[in-house]
Image (tube, rainbow, N blue to C red):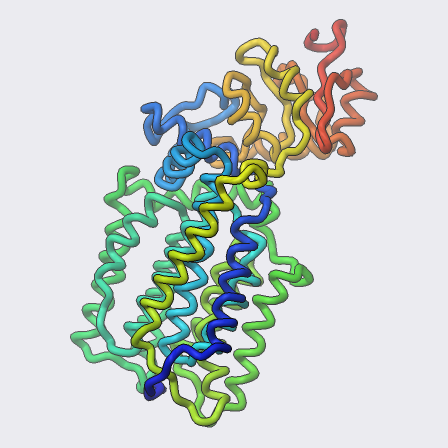
Amino acid sequence: MIATPRRSTVRPVEVVALVTVLGLALIRGLGPFYEPDFWWHLRAGDQILRGGGLRVTDSAAVFAERPWLATQWLPEVVAALAYRHWGTGGVLWLRTLCILAITLTVFLTARLVADRLPALLAAGLTILGAAASLNPRPQLVSFVLFALTLFAWWRTTQDRRPRWWLVPLFWLWGCSHALWTFGIAVGLLITTGMFADRRSRPTRRDISRLLLLNVMCILALAVTPVGPRLLLAPLHFTTNAAMIADEWKATPVTNPFAAAALAAVLLTAVLWTRLPKPPTLWQILTLGFAAACILWMWRLVPLGAIMVGPLLAQALQQSLPPFAVRNRGNDRRLSALALAGAATAALAFSLSAPAMQSARYPESMTTVDKVLSSAPRGSVVFSDLGVSGWLLWRHPSLSPVADLRVEIYNTEYLRSYVAALEAKPAWSEFVESTKAQYALVEEDSGIAGAMASRLGWIPVARSATYVLLVPPKAGIHGA
């Protein structure tokens, strides 16, 4: 059911709510971040800017099985340019712009079916639920584009018109990050739900146009600079990533951010049971998909939070008598002004000294950095996977045993590497096989103690978290 608009001005309470929600977005965007992937994405963007190409055999990845394919090249290049000119503060500003864009897009989507206060509440809850994953890395662009895709399909459910601008949007998405798969999925899901429900069923002509839109979005992905192989790239990544990354594992529902997103899903479902008319099928499918994303894996929680936001806003609106949405005529202008003001404030902070120190991972690496700076070119480093991104960025002439670009490594090799990091049986044989000249691992890890006690490796530098070890002069490799 589509609400009947009525004229309104922006009320003081709505201004307060808007400032509060934007403040939440700014706090998250301008806060420090602990992101291991940040550094290797910067290195990738810098390599591309230097003419490295999108498919390269990285000289630092001596244990890789296949060349590296830069499927996230566009945000990597933009971030590398920002870092070149403004340092970490420039990347922080880009991060904040993305979070503001997500916030206002969810707000505008919710405004299609709800008053300003429920819409702002939905936007605030979305940022709260997604907060843990809103770090400066290419997947943040995916969250923005996913929110825009959802906005387009919500509009389509109201007037049955395809939004053809989704085709170039998916081309951009294909140049940015692999979560475009979920954008395609939500488009097909909403199209299917509309067709299967008599209350929202499009005409045959309309359904043909909507199906054509979905097909053209997929085709747009195949004509990015990476080419058709982009369509299969997620398959190469998934197996290895699920083995080593916590964000690819089931979501810990006790986490406060995930709990907030899941609470929004449950509240929406409860409100639906109290309404005189049930929601449409496409809305039920969307809520189910949101819940599945939240529970499936940690990295998908933001997608679930974005999907549930407008559904919750509409459910809240329909629970309030009378169900009427205040005039939306000036909301886009209001959102544009709010975005401009918040972006300007964020830019001012991004140029400050605290912003330049916002990358908090890894910490206190001065002594480790000094020792590695004198290491011979091509030296192999048995490094913890988390710190490998920083190692690639800061010491590009060295060779980590494995790094966060896990798709370039053989699955069995990566499994042996992970087992060695956990000091499981045959760990010493794996270390020996790499002929590592340095080890950079967490100081309180089992492998650090095992290398020191069993192989006689010697600590030569420490950070807040990591210890740098070298083999003894008379050891298996020499110093």
